[in-house]
Image: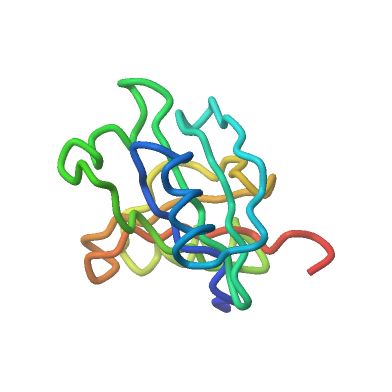
Length: 138
């Protein structure tokens, strides 16, 4: 398996609108995409472009959202995960499993419209890690 570029850093937030204001008004972000719901993952998502990656703002869609538990422990929000690109999601999943890491579920479509999966933080130095197939055309 070949690890690709850092695609984004996921930041959980109780309010995407408040986080947009922070990134725009305090940090000077000029390219903020429109927020959208991702019901299959139980979240609302908004991407903020930076010169070398993206920030993925993630707000829960209700109490069943996987982000809800994170925000219960971190009410102000915070860094939730990092996401790396790989050329072949299925080869990457097999590689991680062969290394004995805990892959959280099967590959599924993520916020960028490409296949993703997560690797448990206990196997990744305490960091929840998203693995994403490199979007076509990149």
